[in-house]
Length: 81
Image 1 (cartoon, rainbow, N blue to C red):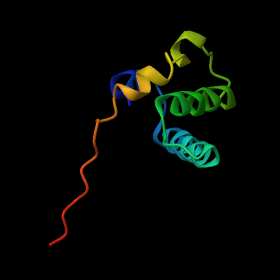
Image 2 (cartoon, helix red, strand yellow; image 1 turned 90 degrees about the vertical axis):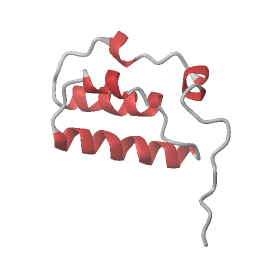
Image 3 (cartoon, rainbow, N blue to C red; image 1 turned 120 degrees about the horizontal axis):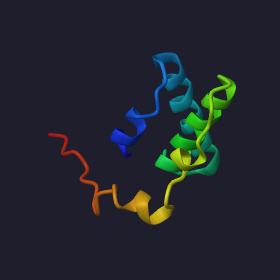
Image 4 (cartoon, helix red, strand yellow; image 1 turned 180 degrees about the horizontal axis):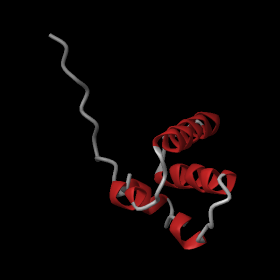
C-alpha cells in the first residue's frame, strides 16, 4: 500500500472505513489480497457517492508490477512455541 498517496485523498473516518470494507469485499470476491488498485477503486466510489470531483489520475495505479513491489519475497510464518 502507498499510504502517503492514500493520505492525500482527503476522506473522513467513516468514508475511509467504507472504502476499506468495500476493497476487502472486492478482494474476497476476486479471491485475491486487498491491493492498492482495489483500495483506489473503493475510494473513487466513495468520492462519487459524496458528489466530490474525481481527478482520474489520482485513482490510477500502474498495475500488478507495482502491487508486487510492496510484497515481501517470503512471508515468514510465526513460530509458536
